[in-house]
Image 1: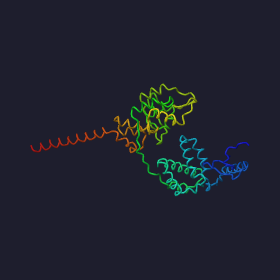
Image 2: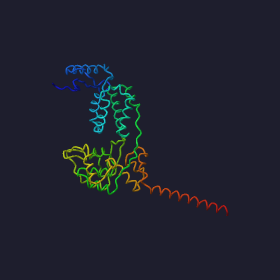
Image 3: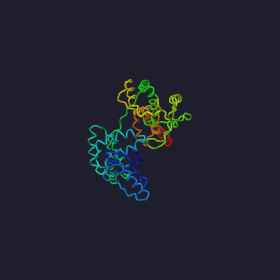
Image 4: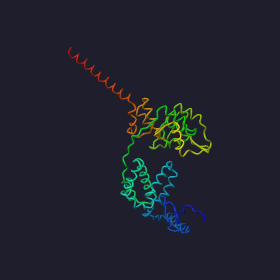
Length: 352
């Protein structure tokens, strides 16, 4: 059977996909096992759009599992596809057979409560964030109504405890680098010397690396803002010596020129060899910030290097700079002594 663009199969039923008058995607079931029936429906819908008679509204009975397929089709083009795919698989276990209109705040909050038994609040919040975004796209694609979306938006995120601060000592940093596999070693070095997130490192392109002016340009950060990260001498030497792959524009690639989708296994192996416990890849970002603060770099500069929008996020490292508080007290002491000295001069002049 010849394939036709815009027609696909879900189980035994054929579905159609087309673009409405407003530029939004439309997904509709033909409710038939016949390919020809789906083809006729698709032609009918396209003709309606051409005539400005696009009257198909959101499908009030659209099943979550069917919508998840369309969402994944969209997500595969996004950089965060892997995390979204994992979250959606978990959401499917709960909401898979539910019509979108039946997913209520009470249903979601009951699920939140059950998840807290096995997951931390942060993990539950990431799942909820994915669910909320899925409903946002469902409304854009006319697969759900604004009313459906507003119900999901009513569910609040759980309070998180983000006080975990694990960082490596200088000796541990050296051990981790020494124990890393050849392909992992430069990735670890970049993490420790720049504070970049894992996704930012693995997706780093050579065009973002300016070895002349010695900085890395991040134009698509988590916060949506441009950020320039200085390249120190260690990184400059390493990047200069690294071969540029002919097959790819990415800095870190495998032998086929493909970017690494994950370094979890090799990173775990390196940690075991180095004897480092209770440590995650993201903690290298904490290591970067912690050692900057302990070296005397001010919190505002650390905030800019990390790309934090709020200083509150960076203040978690402030306690690592006890010398700053001592210096502050010394300044106050000198100031107060200065005031006392001036006062003594003033009083002496009055007595004369």
